[in-house]
Image (cartoon, rainbow, N blue to C red; front, top):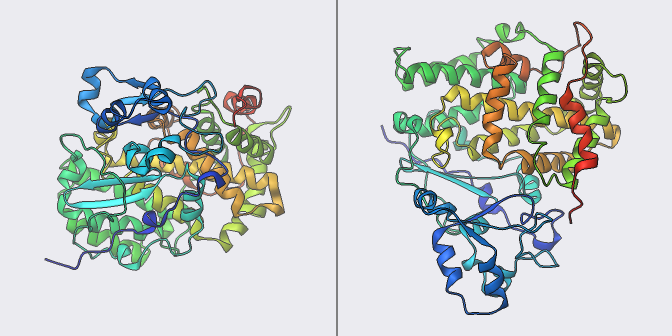
Length: 459
C-alpha cells in the first residue's frame, strides 16, 4: 500500500539562535564533543593565538574509544567555571566569529537540533536546554502539522531539511533492534503515538497511560508473546482510543499522592552530586521547594497537601488556558528520543525495551510537572509562561544531557516498585487528595535545598 509521505515536523528548522541576547549559554555546564573531521581541521588552522587556544584545549579520546565513535573524537576542556574556553566576553564563539559556522563541530553547529534517521525515516527535534528552543516548542499552539497525526499513514518520512548543518557522523549501523523489527511501521506508529499524546478528549495522564499500554503490547508482539501483526494491533489501538473503551477502567486506577511526591523528590535529587550546578537551576530548585511548602518539621503528607493546593489553584488553571504547553513538551521529547524506536547513538538505549523507554519518558514528564507545580505554588498568581520556559530549560540542561540519568531513572523506579503499570499510573496521575500515614521528608529534598550552598558562582 502506498500513501503520500507525511511532512516531517518543521518546527526544529524554524529555530534561530539569538546569540548574546540569550539569557543562558550553550557553551557552559557540560562536556562538548568534537568529531574527528573537525578535530583534523582545527589542527590545520593557521598558527596564531586562536589556533593555540583551540588545540591546547582539546582532549582526544583514547584511540580505541575514538575509533568506535568518531562523533566524539575529542572533548573540549572546560575552564574552572565550566565554560568553553572559546566563549568570548560578549558570549559569542571565537571560532564562529573568526571562521564562520562551517568550522564548528557537528555538536556546536547543530545544537539544539537532534536528528534521527532509520530505514529511510528522518526526523528532527530540539533539545529544550536552549532557552530559545524551549520558547519555540512550549509556546507554539500549532507545533505539528495535521498529517503527522494521521495514524493511517504508512509512508516513510521525508529527508531532513537541507538547512540542518553538518550531517551527523553515524555509527556503522544506525538501526536499533526495535526500529529494525518495525521498519515498515515506523510512520504509522509515530503517528499513533503523537495522535494519542495530543488527544484532548483525555486528561494528559490518561493519554500517557494509553501509551503505557501501547508500549507493553508492542513489546509483547516483538517478543512473540502476542500473536498479532503490528498493523492489526495499530488498527485496534486507534479504535480503542477513538471509542474511549478504557475510560472507565482508567478512572478507577489507583492514586497515591505520597508515593508520587516521594518519587518526584527522588527524581529531583538525581544528578545533584554533579559539579557545576548552575545558578539558574538553583533558582528553579529554590522556587520548587518553596512552592511545595518545604520547611522545618514538614512531613511528606504536608508536602503532598501543598502540592495539591498549588496544582488546583495555580498550575491546573494555567494549563487549562494553555493546554498545548505540556503536550508540546511530550511531543518534542518523543521526537527527540525517537520514542518508541530508541536512539542508535546510545548503545544502552538501543538495547532497551519499548516499555523501558516509556518508563523513562513517564518519569521525565512526572519530574517536569512536579517541578512546575512547586514553581507555580511559589509564584502563585504571578505564575506565567516565562516561569514554565525557565523551569523546563534549566531542568533539561541539568538532567537530560547525561546518559547516566536514564540509567538512574530505571534503577529508581525499580527501587520504588514503580516499574510496572500500577506504579507508572501512580507516577503519572494528576495530584489527588493525600491519604495515608505521615512520613518523614526524604533525604533527597534536603539535598535539593542544599544546592543553595553548593552551586558555583558562574556567569
